[in-house]
Image 1 (cartoon, protein in one colour):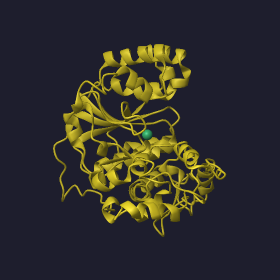
Image 2: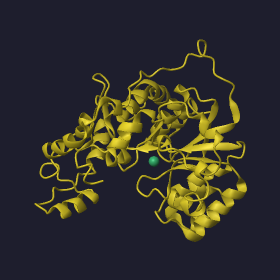
Image 3: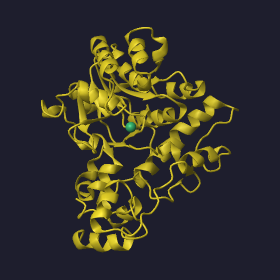
Image 4: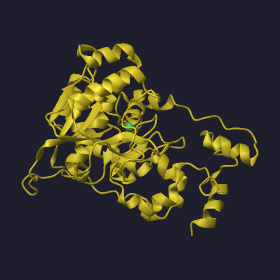
Length: 373
Ligand SMILES: [Mn+2]
């Protein structure tokens, strides 16, 4: 793989990549209920997401709106932590059918007991709460850092626990998108398991992979195609596959430390800002996220906040320094000194990429030209 895909940043990679591997930028449309009446709602099935703070709440709003834009026939549910601000809750309520506050510390039940044993897993316990949505027979959980590019209601044909492979360790599933059946019994079992065993990765993905531990081997129908949970890391580690299959992508997952809402946006120019460092997110999907946020979410936030200032993330926003500061707080790794080919490969694998030296664009372009004809 390392012979095939050399190191370069994402905009360079994409500039070398034929146009069919770039996502099409469709205009964002809001469905008109008179022209396009919604299909009958499957009221016992729901898409569920989770926002533990105001930033993730913005992600949840974009996700919810993307599901609406693609005419989902299922209900939309947002689980929120107790710290999400009231105006954000209002904005969420105008997109989602249900907004449920989950405060594990107040629950006074098995969740509280498990939380006492493992206080580090607070967010995980909040996520596991989705199994308690027993008013629904089946749900699809989606992280607030995902974006839907087309209708994905067919996921409800799958059974618990269906998920796509994790790009980092494909024998594990990625818990950013999964199909599950709400059940108080399963919820209790998960909490007990979590309290006793903790999580091998410190988050919900570790817990869920240990609990649903036959996912990798038992039933291939529970392996969702990768197009339902595509992350940038997978694009850049196997570019020819993205070139071949990328046009079919239905869900983008903005995995990693820097999220779309950590960037800022010039609404006049329609440009995402804060990408001077080699970016970690696919620039076209990032732009889609901001276009949807600017068109459909910001008006809701403006209405909910009224005269109270809030951080919109736009470059002309008085508070945009906050956003820039957040982005700048994850500095790129320092350039390594001259190294051998083997050392260079190892450094690349550790994420230390010599953008200005051996891994420079010119070197990489030569190599790419030798096979991307
Ligand atoms: Mn995620």
